Every structure is written in C-alpha cells, then in structure tokens.
Amino acid sequence: WQGGKVALTIEQARAVEETSASLEKVDGQVFLLKGITGSGKTEVYLRCAQKALDQGRNVLILVPEISLTPQMIKFFSQRLGIELGVFHSQLSPCERYDQWVDILNGKIKIVVGTRSAIFSPLNNLGLIVVDEEHDPSYKESVMPRYHAREAAVRLAKILSATLVLGSATPALESMYKARKGEYRLLSLSTRVPGRKLPQVSLIDLKQEKKERGGSDLLSSALLTEMSDCLGRGEQGILFLNRRGFANFLICSRCGHVPKCRNCDISLTFHKKDRLLVCHHCYWKEGAPDLCPACRNISLILMGGGTQRVEETLRKIFPHHRVIRMDADTTRPKLAHFRLLEEFRQERGAILLGTQMITKGLHFPNVTLVGVVSADTALNLPDFRAAERTFQLLTQVSGRSGRGEKEGKVIVQSYNPTNYAVQLAVAQDYDSFYEEEVGKRDDLGYPPFSQIINLIFLSKDRQVAEEGSTTLKKMLGGSRLAEKGLEILGPAPCPLPRVKNFYRWHIIIKMKGDGQEKNFIREVLSSFYRRKKEELRLVVDVDPVWIM
Image (cartoon, rainbow, N blue to C red; front, side):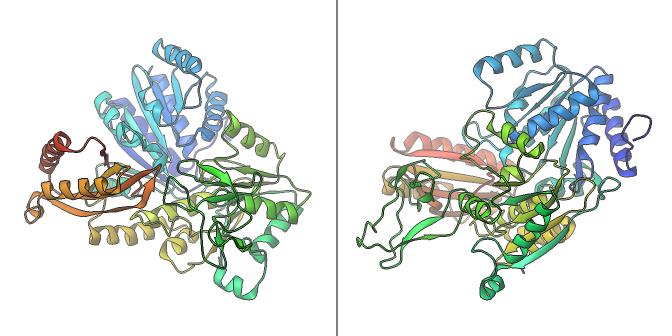
C-alpha cells in the first residue's frame, strides 16, 4: 500500500498506462493481458474501470462462472464505492427485469456477469473486460451459439470501446492474434510482491499403484501433504473433473456395463441415493444388486468421482469438514455463493470440486492444491484436449499460496510424461504454446483454420447417417481444396447417441479468405430445402467441443 492505495508493480503500471491511453483515444484497442496466477490482473481491471468512469463512460466485466460474480462485485464495490449490476442465468425474471431497467436508465455504471451480460443495455460503454478469456463457458451451447469473447471483440469495435482479455492461460487463438499484432499483448510475469508461485510435485500413479501406497484415488504423498496442511490450521483444495461416486458399474463375470436407455453412455453411480445417473439426459434408475445380464452378484465399481473422494476424505480426516462443489451440490439457487462463502470464512477445511473451483478464486489460507487425476480431459477425443488439460492444471495450481504463506501443489497422473502435464507443472505457457501451435499447424486446426461442426440428429440412426452422407456429396469432393476447404467425415460423433437422438457429424476446416463461407451457406440452404423432416441439423461455428 502507498498513500492508501495498492502499489502497482512495474508490469501492472505499464498495463494500466497502455489501456488508459486507449481509453483516452477511444480507439477500440483489444488488449490480451497474460498474467500468471496471482499476478494482480483484477487490480489492472479496477484501475482501467476507474479511468473509464472518470471519463463518464460505463464498464462491462465478464466472468466465466456464476460463482465468480460475488468476489468480483465485492472487490470493485469496496474499492470504488459504487453499486454494481449483476447479470447471469440464476437471476429470477423479476431480478433480471429490475437489473435491466436500472442499467438502461443509467443507474448502474458497471455490470458484472456471465456470457449473457454481453447483451446488457449499457449506454456509453468505454471498457469491456473478459476475465479468464480462455474459458469454454463463454460459448453458448444452444441457439444462438455465440461466443461471448468474440461478441465482445465485435462490440468493442462497433462502440470504439477498449477491450481487455485477461488470462493466465490464454486461448491459443487469442495468443496467435496477439503475436500477429491483431491484439496488443500485455504481460504480468510475476506474482504481486511477497507472493511466490507454489511448489508443484508430480506423482506417477502407475508407480504409486505398484507400491500400493495411499488409497485407490489419493496417493500417499497427497494424503501426507493434506495431513500436514490441516495440522497447521490451513486449508486445501482438491480438484477432480468428474462428479458422482463411480464412473460406471461392470459385471466381473460377463463384462456387462449398465448404459443409459436414451444415450450410448455408461451410467454413473451415485452412492447416496443408490442411483445410476446419465449426466447427459439425466435419466435415473436404481442401482441393481444383481447383474441385469447374467443375474450374478458380481457388479463392481470402476473409477471414481467427487462423491467417492469426499467419502474417502471424511474417513481419513473425520474432524475436518469437506465442502463439495459440483453440478449436484450447486443445483439449488445461490448454492455457489453459500458454499464458497463458507469456505472463505474457514467453516470448511477442504474444498473438493470440479472445474468450477479451478479459476479466479482467491483464498489466502489455501496452501495445498491436489489434482486427483490430471488425465480426465487429456483422454477426450478432441483436438483441444491438451490445451484444456494445460489450462485446468495451471489454473487450479494457482489457487495455492495466494496469501502470505507459501503453497504446494500435488498433481497425480497416469501420463506424467505428457507435454501438457509436464509444462503445466512447470507453469511454462510459452513452451506449451510453441509445442501445441506447431501440432495445430501440421494438422490444420485453429488458429490456422476456422472450424464448422455439422451435427446430424435423428431418432432413426439411418436417417442421421444418410443426411450426413448426402450433405458431404453436396459439398463436393475433388475441388474442395481449391475453395480452401477440408472435410472430415461423415462419422458418428464421439457421443453417438444422446437423449435418444443418433448423432453423426461432418467437420469443415476453412482456410481461405472468407469466400468459402458463401459456398457453404448456399449448400446448407439447398440441403435444408430437401432434408427429411425427422432430421435436425446443428451448425456449430467455432465449436469449443467436438463431442
């Protein structure tokens, strides 16, 4: 602190100076603020917001998760002494209406919200901030399938507003644009004074299993560090991006796995209610005592989710409260806020959760972060799997050691030599970018192309398959390369049946100058006129998931 204000680092001051200059010029500049975890990006946002307010202009701040809104609102309102608006999907219709009217009438100068806040009616917008800009939550999964980050880029250009995209792990597409000069790159390479990056250790679960140390999900090293952490009166965070108790049931005699009747997906076991649940269509059924196929008492649980880890922790640390945050515990309204506030007030010693706990949260008493499985996202059939893994591991590691005490991180993996895991442990974004962008270039994936995922849905498998085959023929064959197009498929989607709809897809890679879009529009228009009524076609431009 200096004179009652937070003293900025040299890099923070430079970032504030450059963004303030853009606000003065009203030039609509886009900045990519790449700052390691704990480097003070939020302080930069606040100083820029103050500058915009001093000019009589308004501010929009986007966050990827509803759970991050209270922390951001508290930080800004306490420092700026004004009331902020909030906009997200958990507002009731009345709350949403009241916020909308207050924003429209100019009573609210700063709005904080999730992706839908991009449509809030802020007049005279001077600054837009997209925090954790890499996060896939900014992409809407249903019509209209907009990406809030890309919408923010367009909006800033239209209004000549300054846009700040902030992240410790920027999306490859954003960094690529920054290195090409389309965005202005700002860097925060160190944590704020007095704070060090946590010490990260990597545990090889294959070796751990051979030595039979620790529980089946938590290694000896992780349990030892957690015991020491709790013994010092400090808090720990455990991350596992898989909810439920067990991934699936399997019969050890005949190999039968209970699957969802609506989806070609194994059912997840939830122990509390003894239910098998589909996490895609939410079909539920009672867990059987006998194998439905061979009628033997031979069903065993495979894998583990947050419920199973919670049970293990309660047994090992019975005197310490475990707070679990996943899609099951946060379903009630305001549950996000209640659970995080309880942990912030140290009414819980261990916060266990899925990806909703990995980013943006600031708990000074957390000195240990444990990653139960670093491989969950790595094994998905998606070209962004390595990038997602790197981002999740780097982000969750950054929750440790954010206060005066130094932090530690334990990362458990069956693939400890994978480059995404290795470079996340080293907190080395630049090396990861170079490695991954080279692979994308070789394969022609973004940022070296634009992707369109065409998904064909029907309750009749043959209709879905025939629809995809017909459209592939309409797109043509030998002369596609001349149009700057590459077609992958048709093929069944990685999730071939969801909610009783069979799913086939075609992936289009566009590498041309934009003319190919007109060709695709014409083909799609012709296809819509002749397609069968029972066939649905989803056109997903710039998909964040290929599932």
